[in-house]
Image (tube, rainbow, N blue to C red; front, side, top):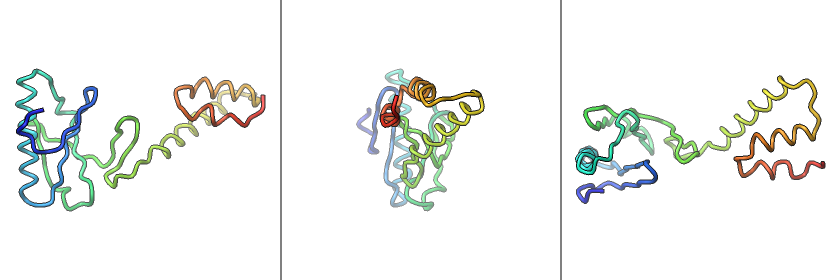
Length: 147
């Protein structure tokens, strides 16, 4: 990233995070300047940011929520919650990933109950292990159920 950028920058697999503490009137224009520097950097290296997907999350209260930022002449959308590496985070920095996962699991179980007329314990265990095989907690969830 360009040395002209004073904000913190994290890049990982096509995902870039730029953040800065806005504690006085100088910090917000500095962040805008850093966004402009990133646009110049992307043009030089031909690695493109999709400004339509870029979002701003104001963390730590509403005192900075009236700030407006742009990238490539596109106003950046404000957000209160965002999914980052599979974990939902809100602007209070509270991860509510577990509640979201439980809600999806309950929706899936409801779908199973409405779809099948007969479910025994073994069939339910096999279906859930197959359906949830990508989740690390799925096998532990059924460990105590006898075969």
